[in-house]
Image 1 (cartoon, rainbow, N blue to C red):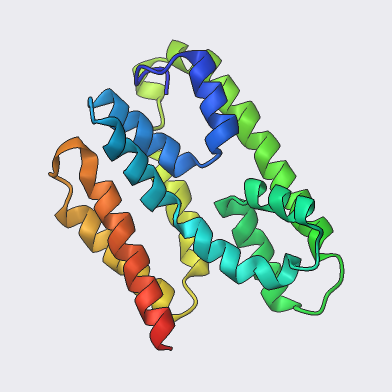
Image 2 (cartoon, rainbow, N blue to C red):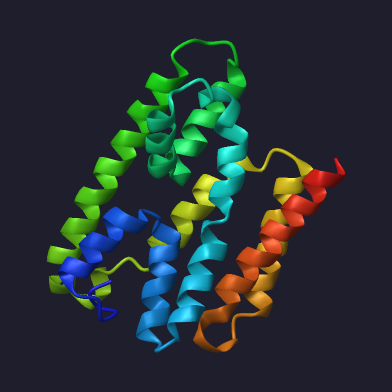
Length: 195
């Protein structure tokens, strides 16, 4: 983020406030490319719409929590924690202790994320260019996504988003990212409604 022109303090604040790696990466790339604020905000919103689907699928497991705890669960919702928890909850739907398991996983992910973002902001600019790992984020999202492709709607959404991302790669201001997110989510929601 700092290499993209965001100050270290803003980068760390963004990590605490946004807490969504994919949209943070996209926003950073769009900022560096000089994109208008409206394009950055809309792209981040489309990318983060996946959390609506995550929330819908995990809701029944955490619905009995008081409102304050549900709000905390929503803030802590991340790809890694969701993937870990939904896999466990699907294997044993009646197993007690779901809230404790969720918050244990989600807090561990949150702390790790904040520490590594701070380390990246403070130390990353000093790394030699050949050591930088720009490819790591896409690989991490692929690794997290593949186990979640369990039904026709999610597979179709992933394929539609991938095809759109490739087809729209040359769009200015990286609009292909937002287009891929929109097409993927629309495809998944449409197929889910039909089934």
